[in-house]
Image (tube, rainbow, N blue to C red; front, side, top):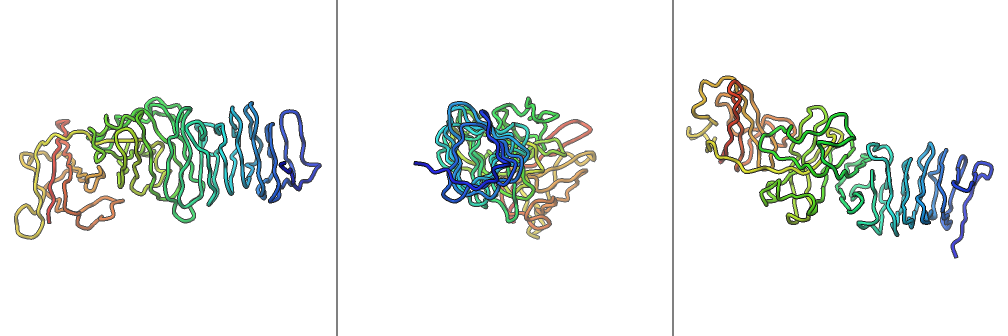
Amino acid sequence: MKHFIFFLCVSYLAFSQSAIHNAGNFKIHEEGQLGLHIDLINSTGMDNNLGMVGFYGDDILQINGAHPPQFHRVELANSEGLELNNSLKISNRFSFYYGNVFTPYGNSDISLHFLENAVYEGVSNQNKVLGYAGSDSPNFELPIGDEDRIRSISGSLPENMFNFRAAYYNEDPNETGIADTPFDTEAVDNPIMRIGMLEFWDITGDKATNISLSWDENSQIAMLTENSLNRLFIAGWHTEKQVWENLGNIAATGNMDSGTITSLPLVPDTYSAFTFGGVGNILGLGNYLLTPNGDGANERFKLRGVESANVNSLKIYNRWGRIVYEKDNYFDEFEGYANVPGISTKDSRLPAGIYVYTYTLHNLNQIHQGFLYLNH
């Protein structure tokens, strides 16, 4: 038999046929259990609870009010789910027996939020968060998705990074309604990039971290990558620049139908949307060998046949599609050193390997591409 044991100021707790309203000092003690078949309205602090709260029944329940409640343990066993119109904070464990949690899309301020070291159980394609979930834990995986399936995001948070939140959108970034302007998949910072048009994530966080996204057969990864995971990367829509950027691929596991990919470190708040990108087939329009070792041969990247093209720009990309060198009005300056911020080897020698360059002739509206083989 479950015991409902809690300390409260009775004058501030009101019951009706449709909701329980907390406007005072409400507390559930360690062995206490509270089962709800009606909505919860919380108008004041409710963050010192232990015990367990359950949301049960066959009619959708809501959490409303001016203040987000914080519960120690929560059970959800409601076929229609739990709708959050204010955040719900979890300090210990959330158990999905059956039913989804819903939060408003387009409003990352409202989430099912897991405080540090809080966990969940029972997640499946039928039991998850539709909308925003968040975490304060150093290592996390958020149980978000759409009506039919889990589309989780995971990662590691730096110290003192709180309120990391994310939601999954099963829609074309070009046609989304969450932004004032669409996330145009043709607007890229590298002409060899392809951007997925089937789904995206909204992620918030103010410190640099790695993120990992999962894909399934509906993501159609093969169309982006020519069936090679080495061509896959996480793409981010840069809010200020209004272009998609390559955010890297430091680890990709799986196959074309399912898997997980991890980005380079990034600050989520810099970007409005995240999805998958791929590097398409590259035409070899002039490949070059660069060996800056002091022997006098191939010391600089000298493009042939464009000596008079003084209105130009050069960009050089590493194997992950990140820009490592860029120069307007380029003329034989590159000697194997990075010159852009955000690259760990900035102002130092780039590692040996194969790079891709794009050379734009602005007055002719032409872009040339090719490989650059760097060997010290």
